[in-house]
Image (cartoon, rainbow, N blue to C red; front, side, top):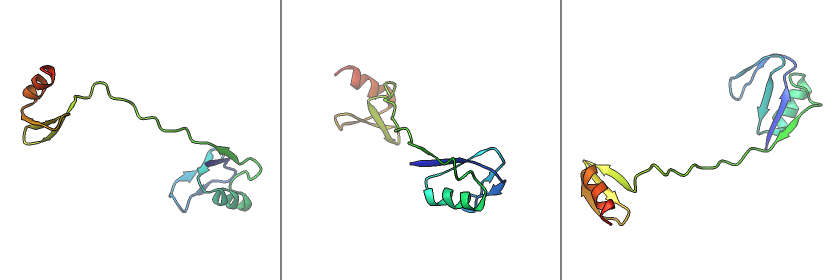
Length: 96
């Protein structure tokens, strides 16, 4: 969970070293840290919002070739066999 609050007094965060100006947003995963800054008057303690982070969705790479470069000009195919040269790797895949 991420907690956000509006900055009331400019300050530099001791944890991250980031500067926060008046009217900006301070965010942290540590609820106690945001509440502590609210008690000191740096952020609005009456307006702390909980934000649920969006799940990270990994993109599928349709453009990725079905072989892996293993160094020295050698490529490993999906079946575990190895061929030398990218062109030969492409030809081996097309012939299957």
